[in-house]
Length: 502
Image 1: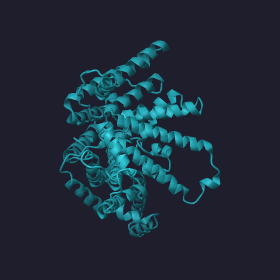
Image 2: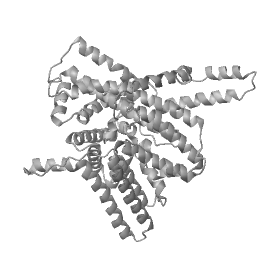
Image 3: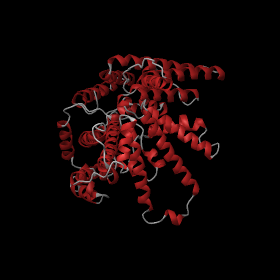
Image 4: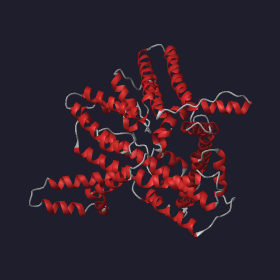
């Protein structure tokens, strides 16, 4: 069951919301228990067998959290902490990396070790990293959890379980314990529906269409030699496909949580508007960036031991960040490229160019273009099935396979301008939600006026709002309804989110 499926939208979500609020009317504990159960049902719809693995991981880490919160002797506490960290990393290594490790051992040493073909449990990286962060926070004294059902919900909460964001205990448990969260709020429901339809549209109407374009290039590198236009067409199409796919999932995750009065941490904020790689990583997969910063880069030494050590730490962090995405040298190279990009970015920041150079007309646009092109080149390794395919496309992008100029290739490139302009110039979903809230507040305020002057005040408030044009998009429910119906009509086949594979 995926977010963009008929059974999820028309069955799972309505039933879950209705029963959640029904249980909430009786007691907080019953609502929390039901939501934990519903989240486990959601995961079981993906993989019934691996649901037991998820439960086993939860039980072990919950036990670890209890032990760490009660052990006083620091040396013992440290030993117990590392035992549970090794358990989590060992579980992740076995299911995600053992085949990659054994195949590389065979290649390097000429051995014939059997390469295990293990099916990757859905969302294992996300629920493992969520629990790793929990153990670290308990070890440092920042968190504790004594209620098992609450902990189960923290790990399995269905809006984030499959593809993030990576949650922290302090972010979620106070919300689950707050009685206000369990009260039905029509504003939260309406905002959630608006945001969910926007996210669904990104996935169904844009990302999936771009996927057929990028797939025609990346999936056929053994049959065709990608020329300049073909290589750039496939690379930019995938760059935009990944953007709308991940952005769509993030919107829907936030929307689903919002319908229950819960706020998920921001995980995606117009990354292709970034003017340097540092800014890009502050906008792309924000929860992973924060995890790598606080649990890997800073423990490695961060920037506390001089520039050279800082650059080594940056590069190592991004290599491991690339490996987190998948057991492939392509992901390692992708992470390494971003490590190099970040080192260059930090180095030029250290040079501190004079203001007159920074303020040269067009410098901002040049910085954006350079950042975007670097990101596109790196995405080639992220998407390609193997290193040979990636290098073939890279060669095409740099004219080593000829130009391949034709009217058809130009037309295909032009079709990519529309989603690119949306990504670059349209407000992102969080900004749209803010506009929607502003509109809603103005309307509600006007509706509290005396009946005789209500229409006048309502009209004056609406036309006096900044960006009045947004009313045509967000003030008309009929437009949102039509968009939702169009999305439903396109849900005729299963289309998985890219980040659910990690």
